[in-house]
Image (cartoon, rainbow, N blue to C red; front, side, top):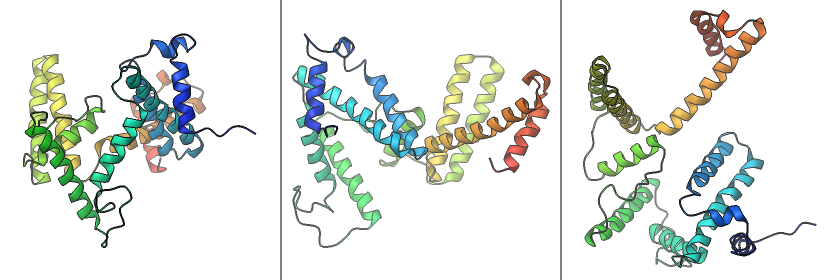
Length: 273
């Protein structure tokens, strides 16, 4: 029978991997910065397993993601900045503070609240508490409005967070139609940049168009990152159908015109792919 290990075993394993004399050479070479790409990759693999409802592999992927936290904790311990216990303690403290509807007296083992809050009340409380935390940092000269939005987030996700944060201080459109007008304005500027032949200007204006489209998605209650991921999957399905038709014909891709390939694409759409 295989052993059932605990979180303590995992932290011990990590310390062994980083042992200066007998540890793993690869693990010993790593730093906070060098393992960031692995952390991002593991997070995406978790999301991918969930989207595919691959629960068996999700178990493994969550373990890989947890290992990233353990790795950072070990590095923090070695540099005397923090360790796994302080990570856990700070997390529990923050979550108790941000959930007064669950922990009304502000302690982990406080009795339940007398009245259950609505989703809107919970959301409002959450935003109020987070704003209080930011206000405290700002009062100490430690924070600005758009601070603590991670640079490493995917571009669309970070755009949403930037826009939401700015919205909290009143810097936002109040009508989706106005955002559509802004998109038209940005498209016109993109056309001018394209005509100018200035590639730097094209890239800049293209970014503005995408940012405005993210803003529209936010106003319509659509998360752009999720929408694009869904469209990516749809494209894969339909392109896979086109590829199947090309293969079944026994011909090469170059034997088909774009119009003929588009006909296969339309067939895929008609089939609901």
